[in-house]
Amino acid sequence: MPEIVTKDQLNNWIREEASRHEACGGCSFGGIHWHEPDETGCNWNVSIIRGPTARNCMEAMRAFGDRLRTRYNIHDPGEGFSYRDHQVAVEARPQRADSGFVYVAQVVIISGGQLRHFDTSVQEFATPGEAIAVGGEIGRRRVDEIVGP
Image 1: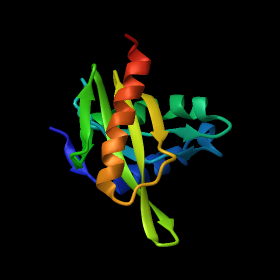
Image 2: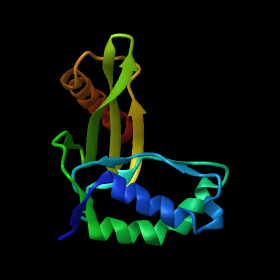
Image 3: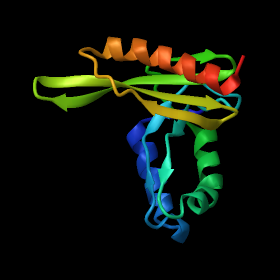
């Protein structure tokens, strides 16, 4: 059974390991996102790796990432679901606004242990619940586009 750790712990371990690889120089890592457990039992993924050598960095980090994915899971935020053999995670991300905070929906779609889609809504919502509801609709629509009829 994987040990439950925080997203911050995973981020720190990933960044620390990346600093040991020349191929990861100049690369940045997106956030850790929860999804329903995939066929390996893991319930999280890194949303994205960006940089001039992102592909090489992913290769350099693959074995380390696989070890993390078999040993650790993150807390289930209760905002994920399976749809057409894909895991969809939806988060309401706070954004600073003149009136305080608004929320956008962030959607991550995983299939076969691989990130298939990452999206953030352009629309802003007054409450996290509204963002989650619309994010779920976006997730289902994107899976339908990926899978087809």
